[in-house]
Image (cartoon, rainbow, N blue to C red; front, side):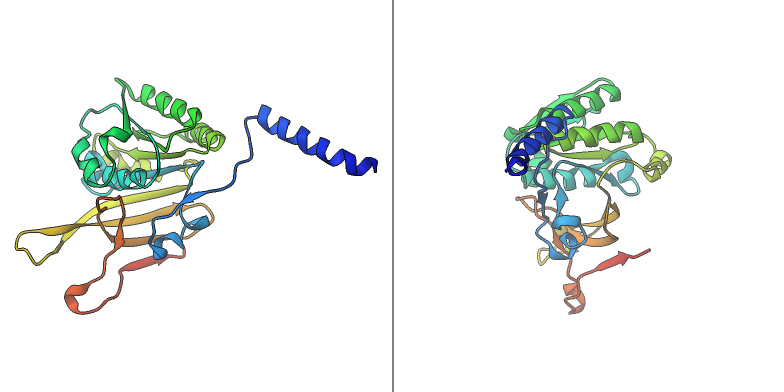
Length: 251
């Protein structure tokens, strides 16, 4: 009898200890892309909430970050609620975000004069909780800082999206350094998919899943986000085949 009565007490003590340590247990939830070929490569079937994810552009996109920003905006657009976007370079084009489903009424912009302040605002917003997503444009992401951000995201259950942008393309080698991010993506611009109307094509991207915890990296050719932030695998209809273009890195 005494043992049966002790279990609830022990559970209550464990909950209190977790609360004091800031490690409140939360159910693991994910944000799927809605594309089975991509979701099956991600643990749980999507981008994990309560974690940070890294994105960068390929080639010239490592400096302007345009494709990576639109990819991230599409991810944020598929969440529900307010989105905080932290940046130091005031060149973000809000109408472009709206085109991929992230309406300006949902976004709270935090402009800082130094990257250190961007990092501080990003961490504070992650700890706040109650937000749909938090985005930050960063040049540097040291391992110690990324661990702190990861703990902040775990504590609130908020998804953190980091866009890595550099001032020169030669600095993009920094993207190879390890961080605590759950996934790491590189988004590069591909030639547009021709449409029936001359001179108009649908934008395409090469989405490289470079790193994923407990998963395999892979490359996907995808159509750019639609007005709801959704992407789709590119099918090569031009040569009559319906084969999606995908490669998986098992090494």
